[in-house]
Structure formats: structure tokens, C-alpha cells
Image (cartoon, rainbow, N blue to C red; front, side, top):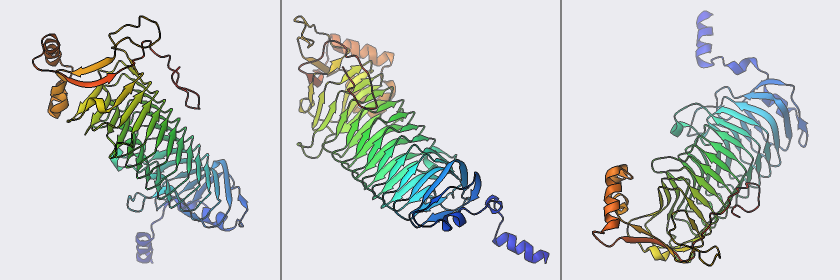
Length: 415
């Protein structure tokens, strides 16, 4: 008898959720089109929703997944899940164990707490859903071993709005066009928002702090990045905002402050697919904008460059004049505005002297702004050993510093 009991415990170990009532039983007892309002308390998961119902936990209901798979699977459309705390998913990256796995359309996931789960909310071929005001935290682990806070895979026309995300890996969209990421707060992540083959998306009014890279747009055309606040993206190879192998993207009215690189951008494949950088504040970064593989294809209008160690750097060969700089504010502009029209009397030009050393030799970046290179740069400017490289020319620089007011809810950013 004792041996049999011992064998059963090995094969079917007791879990903490065994003492909790079944959440699946409550779901199964709710008719299609009905609303489930569980009594406050903790319930045992995992659970699956396979028909149209609404669940309202009122902020007082916890579903514990027992460390097995995803806590809640929604395999239906027009489901509402509101006011739940979902915790204790499995730990498999292969299965993408999540707080919520969503495979249906037109669902609403609102005002939930998703914590202690590997992935937060995972969408798979799920369209026209709304994820709003959820609080998402991953399982404690090294940053690269956490799961995504929100993951979209082949999912279109979704709205992700007003979520509070911390201590997760990335918010990532893969092969997922036409989604809107609006008004989210993302902290302590690897990539705050990562787009991969996800064109025609909108990223607006998000606040991102302490990420290795704030926003990266990769192989995604016609993406609008508007009125986002990006602070402290200090990854060694990261940036506040990065564009790579993308075309016709727009960055408008963003504030990018205290990052290793403010904006990192390569040139679009086709010259007609210009990236527009307009009305952004780029301040207190080691490098304001870094171009690489430069073939032109960028238009920079009405941006404010303030207190960056280097405003613009160009890596590799390229033609500086292939980019269109016009009407930007440069805090190191050395001209005058004698007719008081707000535009500098002479163009603003930036030349690379000793900076060419660390731009062309990556290992030399460690010595950037060191006393030795600063002295060498001073001597180079005083009596150039060779002709310096022209990095940019702004034919109509703004003379007076713009009054900056970031409004993540709408309105203009620079006035």
C-alpha cells in the first residue's frame, strides 16, 4: 500500500493548485454569450476558453497555472477577459508558456495582472484584438532568458494600449502588419518594442525607460513612430530608436534622451523609400544620430540636437550630402541671425576631424572623448593634417532653441 502511494506521488506529484477550485469548471458551466463573475479567491489553472463568453474578476480573482503550460488559452473570438490575476505558468520557451495565449479574433483583454509567467500575452494568428491596461511581469531570470511581455505572430490590426510592462524581455511583433502600439509604459527590458517584418504599424505615445534598445524597426516599411518618450537606452550596441532594412518610415515628435545612440539608421534599399525624421528632440546622448552603410535616403527636418557628445556620426563610406538636413536646431551652431528671421545666416556644417579614428576603427571607441583624442582633435582643427570629412550640411538651421513640450496624448511636440 505504501509502495503504491509512493509510486502515485512520483507519477502524479501534488501541486499547490490541487487545493484550489478548478477555473476550468467555472468556464465550462458558463453558457455561450454569458458572463462569468467568480467569487474572490484563487482558482486552479490551466484553463481554456473555446466559446464566446465574458469573464470579469473584479480585480479579486487569481488563476494559478500550477507551473504547467499557459495559464489561460483563448481559442475563440469575441471573448472578454477582465480583472484577473494570472500567475505561475510553465517555463518552456519552446511552448511559449504564457499568462494568456490568444488564437482568436475580436477579443478584449483588459485590466488584468499577468505576473510570474514566462511570456505575458502571446497572440498567434489573432486579429482585431484589444489588449488594454494590463500589468505584465515575467518570471525572474536573466534578461535574455525571460519571455516576451507581449508577442504577436502573424497577427494583424490589433490595438495594444496603456499596458504597464516591466522586467520582461521584449514587446515583439513578427510578420504582423497594421498593429497599433499606443500609450504603453515599458521599463527594464531588452528591446522595448521590436518590429520584424511588420509594416504599416503605428507606435505612438509610448514611454520607454532603461532598455538596451528602445524601439527597433527591422524589415518593416511605412511604420509611424510618433510622440514616444525614450530614456536611458544604454545597451553597448543598442539605440533609443533604430531603423534597419526598412523604407518610408517616419519618426515624428519623439523625445530621445540619454542613450548610447539616439537614432541608429541605415539607408533604405531604394532611394525613393526615404526615412523621415521630423520634429524630434535628440538630447544628452553619446551620439545623437549614427548612420551606417550610408547611401543617403534620410530627410531630417525640424529636429532639436542638444548636448550630445557627437550630434551626427557616419560609419563606413558614404555621401553626407545624400541626406537632406533642413531647419534643425544645433546647439553648437556658430553663426548669427542678423535679420531676426529665426534662421541662421550661414549653413550649419559638421566636419569629422579626429572623430574619424573612432568612427572607422571600432576598437578606438573606448578612447572617444579621452584627453588624448580631445587634444589631437584640437590640433587637427587648428592645423589640419588632412582635409576633414563633411558629415552634414543644414542649409537653414534654426537659430533659437525650440520650446520643447512632449505630449504623448496628441498635440504638437516642438513649438
